[in-house]
Image (tube, rainbow, N blue to C red; front, side, top):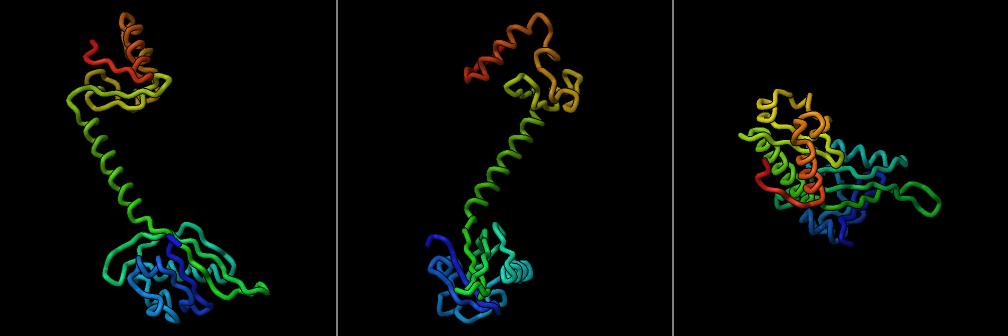
Length: 194
């Protein structure tokens, strides 16, 4: 399996530890079998929450998409998205918990980088020395930077949601600005329009 999978019995002792769990954690099957999962292989900051998820699963309350950080034997941190499922025997009696995880470390890194870039772009737009505005497909203002506010006298709050052409463009330029914006919305750029 390409996902880390572990199993514990009613006392939280490891009964299963697949190859991917060993690869991510650095702990072999032999090192984990029969040992308490939470006490031995979960970082102190996450022991209570992981323990709670396992206890819930033991009473039939399964958990999906529980996120926690797993530190490997070698000190590497991995973010794992865990689904904990109750394990039952042939008679329906609870015998333990099976945890199936997904290593989302890289996904979280990409999301964090995307957020950083978006924050940088937002700061750039807001602090630009030129008026910058954005509109949606209906021509309503979705972005309005500080320079647009200072030049036109409308705050961002006043401008957002207003139709740009109808509210902020003088009558003589409404048709031409509307045409430029319509073209832009179809992917045709116009440079240096006055």
